[in-house]
Image (tube, rainbow, N blue to C red; front, side, top):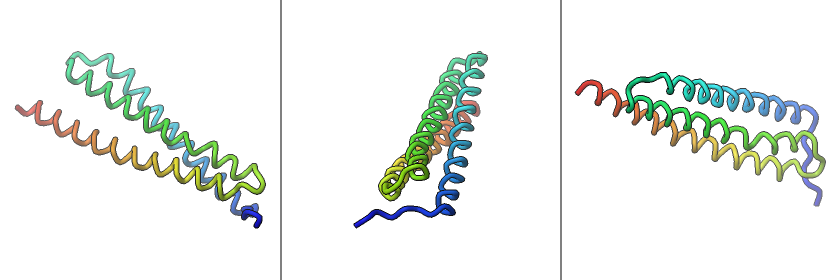
Length: 120
C-alpha cells in the first residue's frame, strides 16, 4: 500500500509550521546568548551562576526546537515518506515541549529560590 502524500495546501501548512518553529528556536537561542553574555557582568557570584544556568537552559531549549525542523523540511520535499517524516518530527517536537516544561519548572524554582535568598 502506498503511503499518503500531503497535498500542496497541506505542504504549505507544514512549511508555515516549520517557519514558526524556526522563529521560536531562534528566539530561545538569542535569549540564551544574551543571558550568557549578561551573566558575566553580574558581581554577585550566586546570581552569576543562576544566570549562567538560565542561559544554558535557554540554549538547550532552542536546540530542542531545532531538532524537528529537518523532518518537517523532508515532509515538504520528499515523496512517499510524508507520514514517516511527520511522525519523526512530531516525536522531536514532543521532546522539545517536554523539555520546555521541565526547563520552565526549573526556571520558576530558581526564581523562587533567588527571591527567598534575597528576602532573608
